[in-house]
Length: 160
Image (cartoon, rainbow, N blue to C red; front, side, top):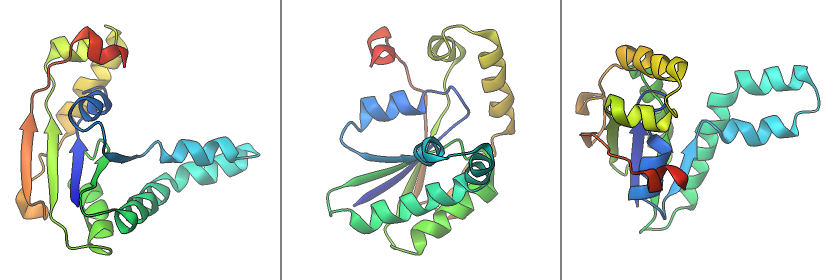
């Protein structure tokens, strides 16, 4: 089994990168929250679910790892800008396996961010804000490796 954390600021193209490079991987992301949110019957339930989104994502990650086969790739897709957030998910992985965890950091150039955001200035600004908040992951945190990737997206990549 291979476990990857694909991290980076909003609109860095994490989903596109994963679809392109790891089409058969099992992906766990914070949108796990969405499936629970759709089941909420009231705004009060939705607020509770939102507050617990990290817990749902963490549990989903654990379950996927526990059910994985030897040749499966499990990917946690998340912004994980802060070391504390990454530590939370690394701890969750360690609770179910000692498999090495690789980290891929997307460092997307402005031209590709513009493609991903359809050139919407507020989204580009949000990307740049988050990029400034990124605490660069390191092997000292517990990753087996940290790789910085500068993805290039084609128009075809964006359509899928």
